[in-house]
Length: 312
Image (tube, rainbow, N blue to C red; front, top):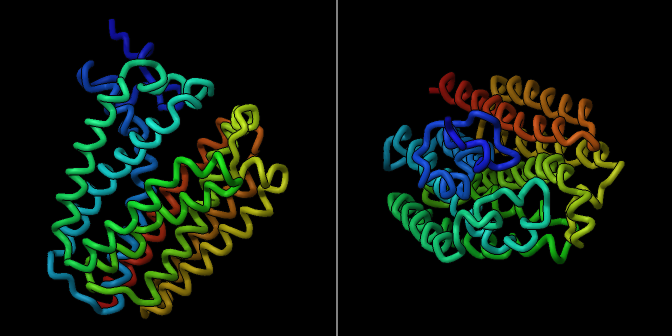
């Protein structure tokens, strides 16, 4: 009989592939990199894909085949999200041991040592670097510049009620990097896309943070969930509304037409549904709505792809 239940992580889905299929020795490392909970990697990846397609809509042709760029960004997003989570867990190990949802993670539970986690972190960063080196020189240096934000993010919840904003600045970098990998430069469209993704990230990570708000308050940690409190839905209207507006401006400035905006309308309905059905006191509901942002991202990606195909 498998003993994976005793070594699974509290907020992972039961029966996920890591717990049920991965070799016993690999499970703690795959959990450390969140491969049992891939939603974060998808939320990191999808804006990269948005950006790639947006550059194509604007008329830029990449040096590498576009399908290969999609694959490279997928590898890079999953690996670097894993690296970021490994780094976060090293930094947060003392806090994670005192929070119900996180004490079962590999480092606070003692299944991975800090030294082993650093080795694993280095290996993931090396793979990420190899992916980045496939891009043009501008994209390589632009991608590396995000590491400053990656380094400071885990410390932000100790000093500000807006760590979700710093996560947005960090997690949204791909919204510009995708364009840079195609065009070899930046323009107003990817910057507007970056703003859209920042607002989206603040919104969905606020929903996510409501799961931990009681523990965070006891530990003296800060979040937008604690700051917004009962006014969370009003704040989500602001950030999700801004997401839709900036997405529209980014697409318009790149030359997108009505096909994209029809898709954006559908995506906006999805964001509205999140706000209307949110219960900030129901952790399971918060987690479900947070995960549903993958579908919002894919709706917008589909709208961009449809626009690009029609304009070929």
